[in-house]
Amino acid sequence: MFSLLPICTAFGHSSGLKMNCIADIDAAIKAAGLSEDEVLRAAQMAPRYLYLIRTGRKPLTSKTTARIKLAVSELKRQRRMVEKEKATDGKRPWESRSAAQYRIAVSFVALAAGVKPAFILDAEPSRRATADPQWLRAARLRRIALYIANQYLHVDQADLARAASMSKANVSITMKQVEDDRQSDPEIEAIVTAVEGAFEG
Image 1 (cartoon, rainbow, N blue to C red):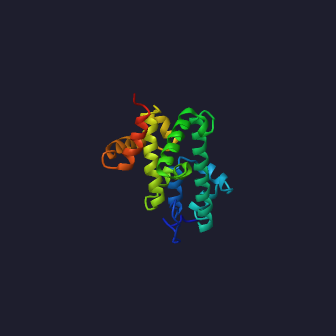
Image 2: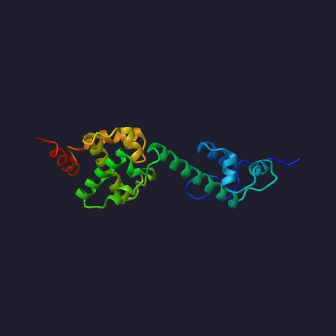
Image 3: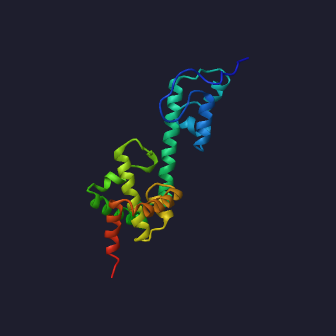
């Protein structure tokens, strides 16, 4: 009879999904909301491959974990793309009204800050690269654009969340942050005041 593998194998892992052992792999697949079968298909591995590892009939190697990690990441990326397409009724991001309004706000903020719109748009919120000054700068400018789009272009927060690839909760927090920071941050105040000037009179 084949014995079960130990709880974890000894080799290390790179940053990202933690897969040091079969339990880690199972947890990563479950956390991603994926099925074992679809992950194995994406990794081009036999349907019972993980079962064979669990029962000690095959070894768990770094090559195996790398293939599974890549498959999980790719399936998650594909799912995000499908979700974005559903959110915009199959239109590209800039073809939906709310996303277009958000990008107009981004363009205005970028012009006022002396950067290109891509500087803001390419700094994806999901990266959370808080150690990167460039990402932090882009995130700060994105918050101002979100505030302008919501307060002056009347874009719903849920639509803004989809347009900016953020959660509704984070967009809501952003609205409060910008409002609170206006009094203490000259740049925010100057940009928002410039927008307000177009709505006066």
